[in-house]
Image (tube, rainbow, N blue to C red; front, side, top):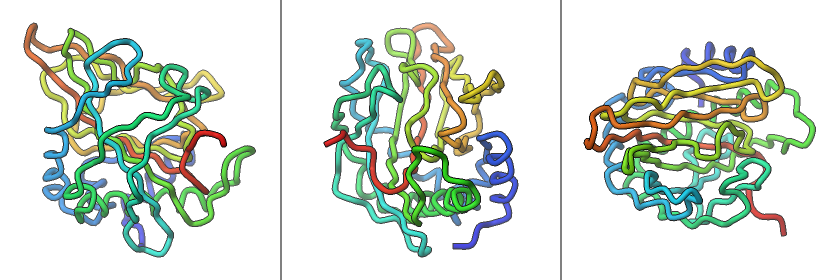
Length: 256
């Protein structure tokens, strides 16, 4: 697919700093969808099972998971049979090293034109980015395919505090990552922080616009989001996000 005009400044910003932000309008344009069609996906965040793998004993995270393969032929990404999520401890010292079996994203969401359009648009943008970059040591070479994992998250304030990134500032072990804010409701905090992986430079900001996105070159930057607290005592608040990761050559699986 040909990239829309909004992709050009995003590609330039990623090349310069390792990250870029897209407004909700730009994300819809990239996905070849209307903003309303993306917002209709919000229903996917109303029925998320608890994450039973939290090692801090918290009850503040709910999530689902799905996997796709995209090939640079302009077609929609193809969903693969449901599979567990795995990360090495090098990238997630808290929850890495174990297979985590999350419930799948419902088919009516995962196979909808809006969701597949979102995956296709982001895949094409990151493919353009990968073609323009020199392959870095130890990084899988982009061969025209992305192995994609998508996570629907709700972090709430049950217990007083919710932690979007309990593992702290981190990389995901992928080529690129998209963090999309779906909704903030009744919360304080949730500030996003992005830092150079190999230097002192960093930025801090708060994603507030629904369906706006943060795009990350995962080899160049580390990222985290600060804890959230309820805006009003005893009133449950939440922060909903969609995190989509892109890896070349294969999914991230345990060594055999």
